[in-house]
Length: 200
Image (tube, rainbow, N blue to C red; front, top):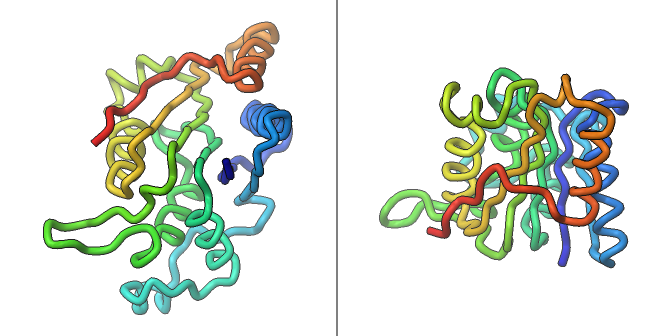
């Protein structure tokens, strides 16, 4: 299986970075091919340009980095995203990745009944998020944006049937022992799921 990891955090000493490293160790141990798109390290710009928007329906990337990202996305079997929850949602950098990389003709197209997802070859999308609030707070108080917008919205529309979310809630107040246990869960694949969206 080929895994594409989209990593979105500016600080190398963050817990998100530790999650990224643990996930990479696991995939290497399992003999899986893994590609990491480190959005900050790559200097990715999340802002769509006027020229891109004017030419949006062609599905042609104008930016060489976006062109590379599109090729990596459309050739993977497993998509993993590692990012912090900021203000109950994904960071702007990651939202920009969605805007600029999920292009018509490669990620989606228009069918007779509306949007037609073209990423059904991706077997599973897995989100690894860190939040200062408990997972239950994100789910029940602030609108459940991670599950509602990303899992059951965007990735469902793209045709990805299996969609999994692991959240490290109250990460800023966690103990060293709790963080170590979480990282072991990433490495051995035993993390509890914050949610699994049903197949559509």
